[in-house]
Length: 127
Ligand SMILES: [Zn+2]
Image 1 (cartoon, helix red, strand yellow):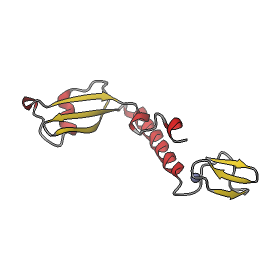
Image 2: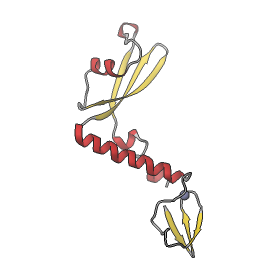
Image 3: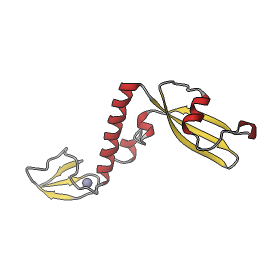
Image 4: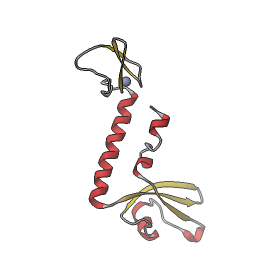
């Protein structure tokens, strides 16, 4: 985000500075392609797109953890159900066989879109 500082325009994220220019003003996004704020902007755009998709089909992201003898493997599973059926999750996301007889189990938790994209605490952590 650009801010005016005396006679200059300064990016509050990367610190780049420009002379006052009609094309750049306070409140604009930073024009530098490699500014970390650009990556944040792209993730925020991704969030907007995912919200639009959710409005169309109602699909919600779930974090699936497959607990198996070698450790845990995580997946993202989309469903229009708050609590999807286990066999539905197994079919959709597991790369390997699901072997409950060997002590394997799944945990399936809802996650909100901002949390999915790591944007839930954006204002506190980055800006
Ligand atoms: Zn910048």
